[in-house]
Length: 445
Image (tube, rainbow, N blue to C red; front, side, top):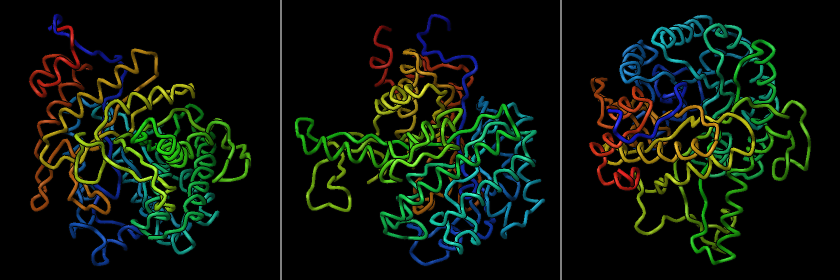
């Protein structure tokens, strides 16, 4: 075995998977997504999160056992705000106790929980007050985060305050694809601003309770490259897309400044240096072409490169080089980096083994160049409710039978288990799971 070429990762590297409460729990509480799913035609395949993966009914035990058997030492999950605070200022002790059971179950299996406090789902009472457009959500979220940490801080010291502020705001308030289905650019950037400030207040509150806690955000970053690199208009359009999607939420937790379009240089003291790590959610690349007929998209049309590999139609180009590029880009912030999500909707598991191998090779390349990458979380452990797509987009390393709830390990799950246990990607694994990659990942062997 020692003679087999390997891409070895540090011994303390976190090998994990990622989930979100509403997508796996079932028996939803009173929140905006559950209300929205009841409306005809909202979810593409007609499914809903009523059952999901049945974690709230106890089947998290089965999935945690599978994660342990795969050799995972980390799992990212979230707490549903609408369960913990079903009515403003009222706390559900039983819900907090159930989450404590989940965190304890992970700890007992040698799996470290990374807990997200907001993953796209808002309690109905918050929505009735204007949701994240209303600045009052900032202090409400701080109060919620404080309550969860007070209740569970002996089991969790690794927190993600808010998942993907840019994606949430753009899908819900700019593109109108998610609840509340608004198409208002000002509202979109107001929501991002409020979520960043809420993150900052929650960050300070958590550290008052847990001085040594690790607290950060999960940032969704997407590659925007000019379709024609020699075109100044394409380069300009790609740069604008990059700034307004990627950079808008990256800089404020560093220097505390809310620049246009979030503000006019307002400095929020609580935002300064308000992350102990950077969470990177990475999936795809878009090629961008200048298009004067697309003012709503800032004159940029997103396209797929002809002949490129892409997952389900319309999702984007599978581009592992982009993960390396973002890891290098984030290095300048001087913080530990966790790949808090990376995956592919691959219903037949045809591309996922290759995706895992190439993206982990990209991660290893960044590590070898000094980038402080501390962990990698595959989205997702098991097939789950994928928001507007329902169960039509399968991301799981584990297949879920919607009728019986039966779990079946996919080939990609077996591969990830081998990688997690070895703490490495070996030439032997590549030869068995994606032999066409052998000369690319191990050119000397």
